[in-house]
Image (cartoon, rainbow over all chains, first blue to last red; front, side, top):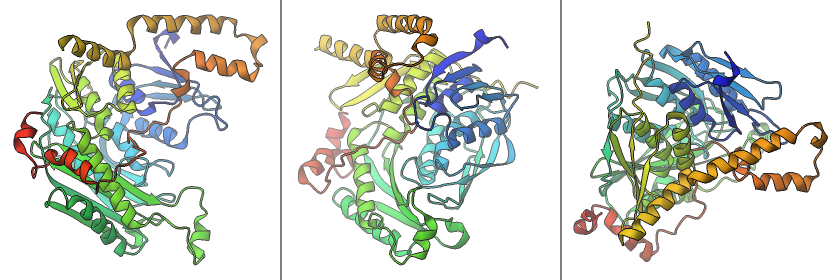
Length: 380
Length: 102
C-alpha cells in the first residue's frame, strides 16, 4: 500500500466513530498525536480492546501501533460477523462503549453476528446495557433493519472497578441497504418504564431508588413502572454498585432515555473496602433515583425523537441510508453530535441541512444518504 | 421573519461545518509550521507552545474523551411548580391541542 491512500487524522477524539466510518467507507486511516502531550501518552486499554474486537469481527484488516501508542495505522477489512464470538472488553470502559460502534458495523456484516461481551455492564460514563436493550436496539427498526434475530441478553451484571458482567448480543444483517426515514414527530410522553440494578449491595437499594424516582414522576404521569433487578452471587459481578435506567415512551413510539449509576472508582483499593467495616459512602439511592428522574425530564424538555445520547448514532444511520432524503428532529445539538456530523462529512461526503425551529426549540436535520450497501454480503 | 430565519439557519450550519473559507486558511499555517519545525525548535519555551496551541483552533479538543453520553452538569429541581408547568404539555396528561402545534 502506498502512503498516499491513507486518510490522516489527529488526536484520540471520536475514536470509535473514526474506526466505524473508516471501516464502512473502506478508507485506511492514520491517526497521529494520540494524547502526545499527555503524562501517559498513547492509546488507552479500551481503545486497544476495541481494535482487537474489530479484528475479531472482520477479515483481512490490519492494525499497526507505534511503540509509544501515539500513532495508529488502520486498514479496514470486510466485516464478517459470525457466531459464538467472545470478547473481553476489559475494565477501563463499560460494555456500552463497545456496543455503539458494534451494532453499526454488525448490521453491515457478511453473516449475522452473535457475540458474548464481558466486562462492566453499568457505569456512570457510558450508556448502560439496559438503555441499549430498551432504546438503542429499537432505533434500528426505524431504518428497516429486520427484527428477526435481534436479541440482547444480560446474563450477569458487573459494576466498576472489577466488572464481571456478561451480555450476549445477536444482531441480524441488512440484506441490501437501510431505509431512509422521516422521523420528526416526537409525540407526547405516555408512559415511563425503567429498571434498576444492584449488585453486591442490599436488595433494598433497588426499591429505594424506585420510590424516589416515582415521587418525581407522580406530578406528571401515572403510568410509571420501574422494575428492580437485584443480582447476587456470581451473576452480580465482582464489585458493589447500583443505579437506574429510565425510558419515556411517546405516543409516536419515540424512546427517550436517561440513566445514572454509582460505584466505587478505579482508584479505591477494593480489598480494603471489603475488609473494613466502614466503607466510603456512595451517593444514597434516593439521590440516584432523583438524579435519573431529573435527567429524564431534562431530556423530555429538550424535545426531539431521540435523547442526547443517541444523536450520534441517529445521524450516522441517516447518512448510511440509500440516496433518499431522511429527515429527523432532535433537541439541542450535543458536542458529540456535532463532531459526528463533521466526521460523516469527511468520510462519507454527506452534509446535513440543519434547520432550527424556534417555536419548539428543536433542530431538524435533513440529508441525502450516501447509498451504503451491504457489499460484504455479496463478496464470495 | 423569513430573513432572520435563514440567517439563523446558516449560523447553525456554520457552527457545525465551519465557514467555507476558513477551512482553507486553517490548512496553511499548519503546512508552514511543519516546514520549519526541524531540529532547532525541538525545545520550545512553554509560553510559545501554548501560543501555538491557541493558534490552531481545533487542537485543544482533538484529544477529547470519546463518550456519547451527554452530562448536563446542572439538573433542574423538578419539584418546582414553574418547571412542572413548562413541560406539562409534553405528556399525554397535558393539553393535546397545544402539543399538536409542535
